[in-house]
Length: 272
Image 1 (cartoon, helix red, strand yellow):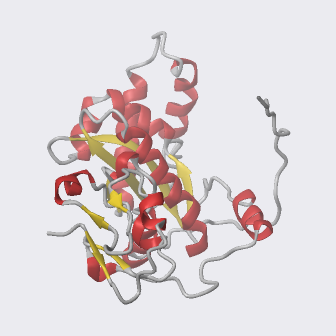
Image 2 (tube, rainbow, N blue to C red):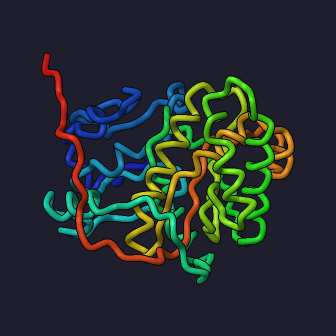
Image 3 (tube, one colour):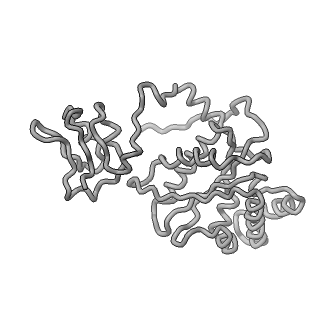
């Protein structure tokens, strides 16, 4: 099966598809031939789609999920540097949530954006576990507290914070998941050396996209530490065989709005 389908009536033989291919497997066109991927090189294609989306005349179709091909009308998806800057700078870690659940349809819309995140070799190794039930979120937070209790008196960097965190939990607060109604957990194949980075990139896409849908997020650092070390929490997550926890975000509808942009340290750059 051909890796690349070319419309000979639209192809201008400009050579861009060959130039942008990260695997250098698209043979450029000449007077007598169209651009092509030889059968011997088809297995090297990582299905990134650079060739298809970089074609000015829309002559190419990557032969991978061809029914999902979408073109960009002129001006679609553009955003000014100023608007983008304000959007990103006003992003906040949310630690106070309403009880209103985020509909599953909206979560899927955010995940649909996150699936376009960069990954090594376009491997797309990240899969998702959504803990949608607030009671289950609190259960996982409780297991994280149980892990914290095992650190008491140890040399772990967290040990000094444990008494206050446990006391807050026992007083009815949730210092782990902050009362968030939901968790999004990224999990990856075991033994993949770059998949952890891929998961962080994908979760960052979720983190950045969420406010556009009226959803607030916060990185679940305590839960992530526990998930890496505490077997009861690992068993409770019940990830598919061969998959391992990477990182997670708590999320829900923010209780409070943002009305400004806080200060940050100046950029420190070394030029070479």
